[in-house]
Image (cartoon, rainbow, N blue to C red):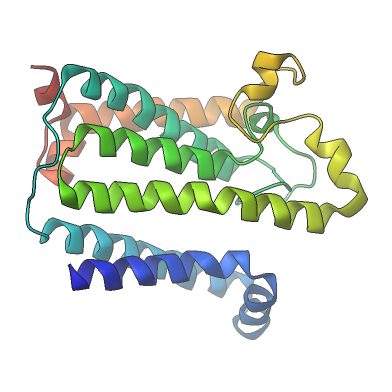
Length: 226
């Protein structure tokens, strides 16, 4: 349990760096943007692997019994969350986390202005529901809590960064996924990067269902439906 706590603390610390503009800018100023992204990507991946490894060695303690509806929830929430993460990273989005650097929001913001955070939350919740044990609750529940707690901080940073332009940009989107579309205040949008994200998600989900999930984690998703 101590190793898991340490691993998760490192994971949170690393992912807090982009939320501190002064620290991030200082590091980029020292090593340069390309080197920063390479080092940060390697360190983040290593921390994530450590978190999963530490969780797997925690004693298995069941908390709730499995129900078929839990598998259905996972089959819906996990791919949806994956799509939002991929679409959010690929799309221009000055309102939130993105690998693209454009100043005009892409179509993904018609779903939510924080697709990466909400996607990570949905993915984690989907996995937490279907795994009714303590280590899964700590692992996926921790991810879900971290993601949802980051949303108001992302809102605050976007307001400060955009200043007077915040109201105009934010009016074309909503925080909660699809809330703006459902209430009629936001028009649905679609662009090439959303299409690419959908194709990548479909390919990745198919691979995980057919063999990838069993190979990586030793668990066959289709076994849950049996």
